[in-house]
Image 1 (cartoon, rainbow, N blue to C red):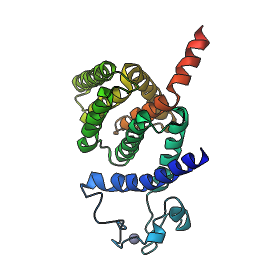
Image 2: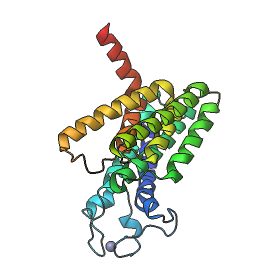
Image 3: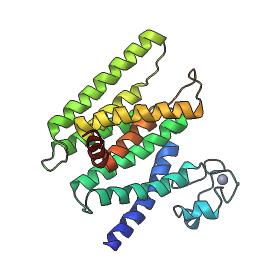
Length: 254
Ligand SMILES: [Zn+2]
């Protein structure tokens, strides 16, 4: 069993490296596979020994060996977070390499990329959200899924419709596009993966998290505020702790 966890950690670290490439390159519409790793500042290709997840970042103190330009901090965060989330997922799901594990490994991978692209570039690219909806649908239609296909499809459509309506009302009231089209497609993808119950949880939890953050950082409301990261964080919380949280919530009121 220890070997399984170690294996997941190593795979997670390696995948985290790739997710970082996606986070840096997808908003610039660059290929994520070619060319291999290079420094975006000096365009020098990165040596194999400087491309070891987590360790290289720490060893180089977050700077390019050649030009000393700072490497964005998301590189380190994603390389640590990806294996940790995979391990937590594996543990929560009862330590099985089954369909549900792979379903959420895919969701978490897309989610991490979307989280940081929205945070850095205020963008939730269609080339990520639309395939995620399609992948969610495929998993929902499989017989052994954790969420029934009916629940997934209803959640996806109602999430989409609700956010579209909210965006419309916001636009009428403020004459500004407060909610991007990306958020609307993202909530459709989340609904497809987590079903009706998960969708409710994600919407409520993300609103609470966003409100707390707005208060904490004293955000200027005239400036753009990305909502995608909160939706993604909330759905991660649901996937990892949803069952436990809902049970303790019900116990508390009974
Ligand atoms: Zn460089």
